[in-house]
Length: 249
Image (cartoon, one colour):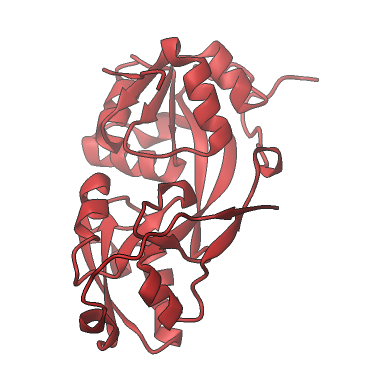
């Protein structure tokens, strides 16, 4: 495993206002089924975080926002951090917890679009790929986005990405398959038309303020992140037999 230290800047925040309380306030992106208002328990990942904190005698209070706003709101003095986040989305002023839950990154297509891809390299070489511009993808995926920028389209959020795929303005939506199925259902599109091909698992972490991480032993200053060669890509459908700018459509 490649050891990566998450950049931390100690911020002049009234730590006592948070640490003296038995409840952590966390900003969460609206990212069903992992997090979101109206979901049972606030989402599957939020329920897991709540369970982990409860083991430490810490309660959880969650406010839901779009991703980039959640990251900004979490800087406020009365917030402990934001969750869920991919490890590469932990911003300056926060550090990554140990993995709390797991998400999946897949090449999601509509029926009839899969071309027998073995890897993400195949996907980017052969398809028009839509990506989420607010997200920070794994390093090897970011490299492919830059290499194939001429055929990559950016979406401002999951709804925008789903609409691009449904209108066939892109061939592939690069996101979590459970998330895009949820969005398709919400928009009145047919979720069963979606197919997920090449996939990888990505841990979900809590981006937490360093002083709070030190107050709870479960949170680490550095975490082991898989290097590019250690991500497992799985072909699950129609497998073969044997700043470059990104446009926002």
